[in-house]
Length: 301
Image (cartoon, rainbow, N blue to C red; front, side):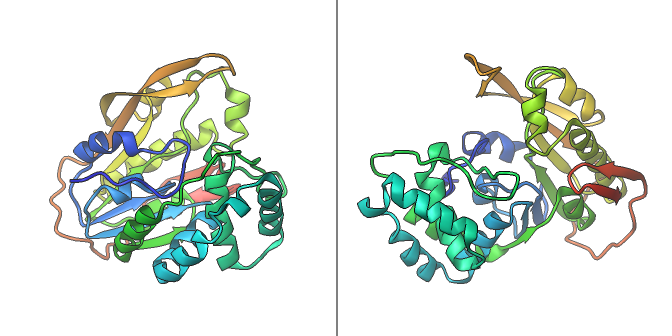
């Protein structure tokens, strides 16, 4: 299977690991991704159906508009990839207009533009919800036309939704497979904890994700594969899963100093009895009460 790149730059993208992830993903009719990001796993697997979620409304808005009218979207987006717009003043003006606009289509075009023209392809917002990534000063930002075209074709099999990971788990039915690529856990319980927690995905969220995976795999017989750093912490959080350490290594910046490499962990939660006969309409509840820091309100599993 030929590998396909995402059209967005994305921190923690899984393009380099798709072969390893694909090797450990169970069979099924539908793949559910609660943390779809740029969609590298979606683009490089072949399920009949996809439910792709993220809590970033700008990301999901872009995907839905590209899916609806790819030719129009690509033509309009391409107009922003000219020398005229590859200037700091133009970038800052577009960023300001993006932050003031409520027009979904305009925001989708500007989101792609800023992803390719902004520093390092970062996606970052201030406390008021304003996009605040600085200009990247690249000589000639790449316009990903072929990648956009492939994504829009593959998107015919997908449903894109803006929702939290507990909501995605609640909708999972037997015959589905869940792949989770959450914000990664810190390398230790002390290192980088402050900056990590400020991302909005806490250690409590990491623990809750493991609980959701265990319960859904057992009570609904939906297998769940989770990617994360391979540390004592993640192995503890994902107890009960089958662990696979991926030899490909990710470069991680630690304490603002040098660069270090850390192994990837693929944790598979899977019931021993999982014959896939298709997506069913099973609505049996999953029972347990716990809170999630993601939604800032109690969530019932």
